[in-house]
Image 1: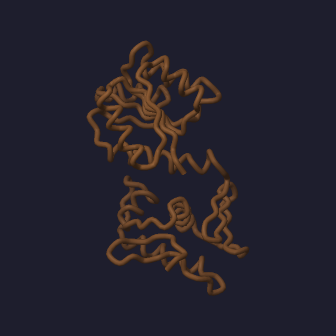
Image 2: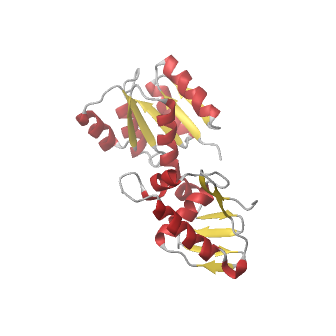
Length: 229
């Protein structure tokens, strides 16, 4: 699913760099270089996420963020502030105004893409639908219930989160380190072999009634959810 990204930034070279890299990842990118025009575009187009510069002509990024958060139609759009201000008080002010994340210039395109993906992983299921379906598995996000080909699957909380992550990224291979970061979070220390333990538990639960194994082990790479093994 393509992500609609609105960039409100008045630096031409930076906007072109971001646009090139974000479109290369399959996103749909719109650029506004004026604060007032950026606000109007956000209200008219309701993008999936906004990359918002702090210092803009005619209307500051802080004021744009404040107005978007007051509007019922835009209050839930994720906002990443882009700014050369690196002082702690500035970061706190930006976050308190309603920004979801804060990136200090200069930054790499890889870091920006990682920040966007992290936010969209958190909010996309809640915005788009209350269930995920993949390879015969249905995951009800509201009631945390899972079935496979009509059979109820019982999972612990960690196995549930691993499966949810896989279902949101089918056929992609993830290393143990990536899974630790994405599922457990980078602020929690967990040994990489813990991933293997939970994968075994998840496989056992999913392979109910001798159903085919759909969690693929990729030697020296990691794991993926893939029915074509």
